[in-house]
Amino acid sequence: MLDFPRWKVWGISLLLAMGVLLSIPSFVPEPQLARWPALMRETTINLGLDLAGGSHLLMEADTTDVAKQQLDLMEETIRTEMRRASPRIEIGDISTTGGRLTFMVRNPAQVDAAVEIARNQTQPVGLGGQRTWTVSVVDSSRVVMTPTQAGLEDALEQAMATAREVVYNRVDPTGNKEVTVVRQGQDRILVQVPGLQDPEGLKALLGKTARLDFKLVDLNADPAQVQAGRAPPGSQVLPMQDGGRIAVQRRAMVTGDQLIDAQQGFDQTTSEPVVNIRFDNAGARRFARTTQQNVQKPFAIILDNVVLSAPTINEPILGGQAQISGGFTVEEAGQLSVALRSGKLPVELKIIEERTVGPELGYDSIRLGVIAGTVGTLGVLIFMFLSYGRFGIYADIALVLNVVIILGIMAIFNATLTLPGIAGFVLTVGAAVDANVIINERIREEQRRGRRAMDAIEHGYKEAQTAIFDANITNVIAGMLLFYFGSGPVRGFAVVMMIGIATSVFTAVTVTRMFVVLWLRRKRPTELFI
Image 1 (cartoon, one colour):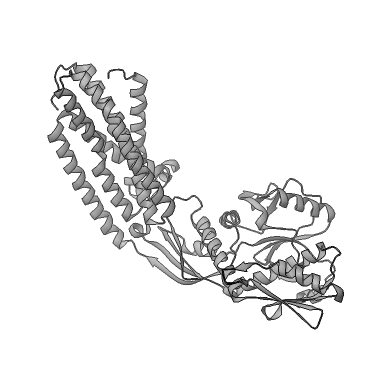
Image 2: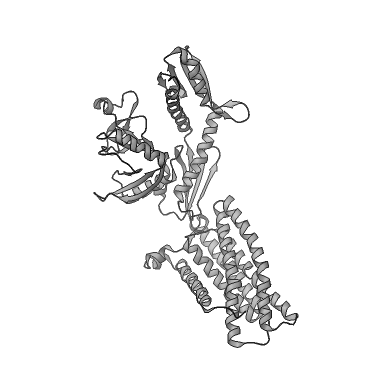
């Protein structure tokens, strides 16, 4: 029992001191905290929407955008597959008007082959035998592909599932704000962000589809026609960010789908804020090949169908890295990098409801939560002292340290405390002394068996540890399941509970054992009163 090295005493003391130090900023009022060093200001606990208020946004998907994307994607697929066919199938007069894709097969003998290829691009939906598209032939040589209602509903479902993930990654890229991002109905997403100070910035971030394309500029287009909104076949007219219009080829060199990273940075020449991007292997090869074949030609960097810039390719761009500039501020470049990293929204989302949640209810909740926690803690402290004397005091000290360390760990990760989190906090305080009760009762049992003081303590701690660890492992598993399958406040409860379990085992077993060892070395008692 006395084999407790000095380095371990100093190590535990240092951990406890760090926990106390890290918890302090969370108790300091914001006006005073603003004068503290930046590191200490950033090491605080965030309050959830139910405690600190925040923003509530309800967004609705543009279902017509999903249908248009499906048409555009199918058009590109058909063009590619017809070129790959052996022998190649020549098609023309492609149109996406009227919500359907039509194209003419130039060689009537290849119509059946073209129809077979088109049908292979459709997918079954559900169990009723329906497919995503219907394929038919009119006028003997024109193939018509029409999206089915089941196909559109399936595409919307997939788009909304992806959109929810993208929105979550944009709002909470670090995963520690305990935001709520949930689906409502078939085409709506609810977003709740606690303690938000810049709702306009949030709306701007979520309003970006963040569809990034690199396309070659059409140098053959007539400038007068372009300004009138007309482009040659195979090209399109897009607005430029600084005004005017430009014609670009419809087919993209590289798209944002092939990005693997985007970071805000500064241009080495002009020092203006930019976004540095990096492509995956396939995107890097395609970007390098296209720039090699088009040296001294301009290409357009397009974000959400707006041309940010159209620089000239001075030399092949190898290595899979590029730079996006567009007269950004640092904040705009940072928001764009977050949007690009989180991926493009597969469907346009419009904000149809916006509310600001006040923190008034949170003040009452915090006050009542503090009262509940204080009363519960005092009750536990008194009970432990009356039941176990000196060992109860050690357990009480460990309990107080446990509370402080929980707050310190939450502050390190800028974790969010919600109303359920307070409930988890109070629950953790109530259960934190369970280990000490088990240990102390085990020591009493060893005393009744006639063991000496040191032997009783040694066996008490040793025999109790197995039961303590087994019980807490099952609680950790339950907390992990709550965190994985839950969202918002449920995850907040799980985070506090899991942190509390880890710290309570450390303080109840290791810290109290250190206190007991130091007392035994100093007093060398022959009897125990426990």
